[in-house]
Amino acid sequence: MNIAKVRVKQVATQAINKAITDQVAHKSEADKLIDWKMNADGKVSGFMLNYAEHISITSETVQTVQAALSEIKHIPEHIPIGHALGSAIISSFGPTVPVKFEPVGATKVELNTRERGAGINMVLVEVYIRVVAEVSIIIPFDTEPEVVETEIPISYLLVVGDVPMYYYDGTGKPVGDSAAQAPNISVPLQQGAGGVTAKPGESEGGAADEGALPGEPSAAGGHSNGDSSQGSSSIQLQSE
Image 1 (cartoon, rainbow, N blue to C red):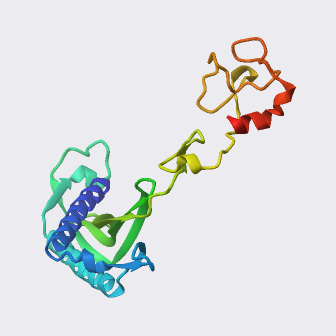
Image 2: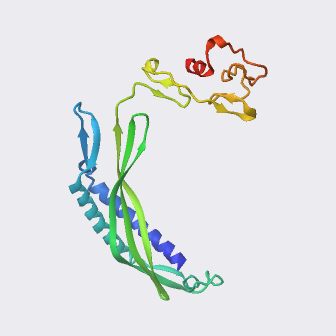
Image 3: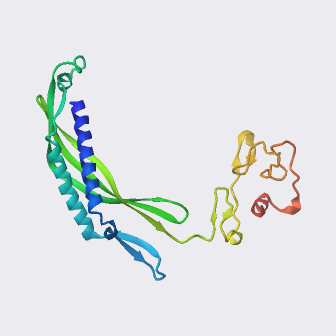
């Protein structure tokens, strides 16, 4: 039964994907699916799915999936009788037996979106269809239900926002056209091997050892030239 389940799931998934892909290719109206929202300055502030188009795509997809499953149920599939009997010894021997399947239950179709960052000021939105269909696998000795689940992307949207004046990289340094106007921030020191305190990204054996605190041993040995007139170590970190 296991090999029958795998084969039926493979055939059903391929048929569903092809049917929906052909439907989207011939009746693609993804531009009507999205309603863009603008702010007072005429810039994109968000979007929402068009409910009417959403329902239309969902209903058409349900019909397409059901038609695809009805067609492929007549495709002849055969497995060795040893597989049908569940015997590991004779699994590859003996005559083959037919495998059929019937769609059972209702086909569920969901139209969803997911987002991921595509840069400092961009978001990539994927619109996809999730299909869940239940079929019944039939062999001469057994019948077992199986769930077929697949996802098919139908559209991608790139939402571009305003470019920030500046941003901070992983070391706490401002980057951008207005980086000079960015306020300074203190990067926390990290405890390295052997108790040596170093800045993020600084090697523990660096010759400069700018992260060593006044009066404490440096990574190269000896002591740093701390001066009480320069204030506390926290003030020195902020001025760097």
